[in-house]
Every structure is written in structure tokens, then in C-alpha cells.
Length: 255
Image (cartoon, rainbow, N blue to C red; front, side, top):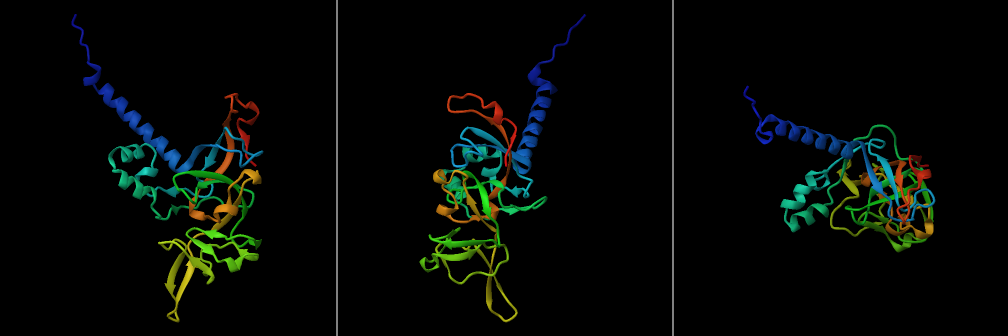
């Protein structure tokens, strides 16, 4: 009796395995892009709510997912970008001021929500803070320069009440432009032929629960709404500095 032996590498078994792995990678990338992501908490700025060493589950569909702006923001595909793009091209993509496009679904950001977002000073890194004020709230007697992204209020505005801007809010004349590109306003010509500017984003005032150890809106200003990644929902895993598991924090709801 003849026995026919198939070579694994020349058979359809390898092709089938590669196809399944490829589909699995696409599925995982889809989940990470549009449904949820896991983030590590590296500091004590949100204690006692979040501790250094927590891994938090962040819902991206809560406020609506964002479309990636370039290949470097797509899981797995960014490996290709870092491997084949020049350093200059990578730097250009990382420093791009191109706005995020968001698809809204379930709910809006509320006061007291704990949010993960792109660092306003470095979009390649992320921060987690609690929302202290939402658009249309009034920030009373600001004693420091309040930074909008690429814009800053003049010194004469110190110790004055400031309304947190919302998308579509008419521009405020006494905000001084200090950036190279207009990321704040959308300008149109009204029926009277005058140029009118409106805010392009909602803005939020973010604070860390551990105020003494937190660099938040008191330092870098208001959070631009399209920088929001998602809402922190629960702690998936946690360990201390000695890698000892904090069992009481696993699957703990974030409030």
C-alpha cells in the first residue's frame, strides 16, 4: 500500500493558517481601533481612584470612535510605517495637526467622567484625567493664562470668569493667536459679508484626582474634544511596584 505524504509548506494547510492569522489580526485591530483599548496607568496623578500599575479598560464607542489619521495610528500596520518610512516622514505624521474625525453614538462627556485622551502637548502619548467642566460651564476667576490648543488668553484676562467653549460657539475677540495653523476656529462669511469665526471643537477642563501630583488643565489648558480617546470603564488588572497583584482592584468599576 502506498502512503502519500503531503509537505506541510506546499499544502493548503500553511495557506489556511496564514489566512486565519491575518483575519484574526484584522479583527483585533478593529476592536482596538473602534471598540476598546487597554491602557497602563504610569503615575499617581489619579489616586486614589486609579493607582500606578493599573491596567484600565477604555471604551471607544462610549463617546463615538475616531478614524485613524494615518498608518501610524493603526495597530499592526504602524509596524510597516516605522519599518519603511523615513525618519522625516514619520516625524511629519507624528507632528501632524490634522483633526480627528469622530462618529458619535451613545453619550456625551459628562462632568466626573474619567477620560483617556491624547496629550495636548504630545499627541503620541496619552493621559487619563477626570472631567471637571464641560462646554458652557463657567470657570471662575482664572488666575493664570488659560491655553486653548495653539492659542492663549491674554494676561488681561486673568482673574476673570471664562465660559468653556463649545462647537459652534462664536469666537471670542480677546483670544490671541500664537500658532502656525488655525485649529481653533472655522471661519465663514455671513449674509452681511462679514467674516465670522466659530469654535471647531468642544473643550473640557480636566483635573487629576491627586491634585498635588497632577499636571492637568491648570498647566496645559483646555482639552480639545477631538483628542478624547474614550471613557475609562473598569480596571482590568493591577499590580504594585513589587509586581504583587492587587486582587481587590481587578475588574473594579471606575467611578
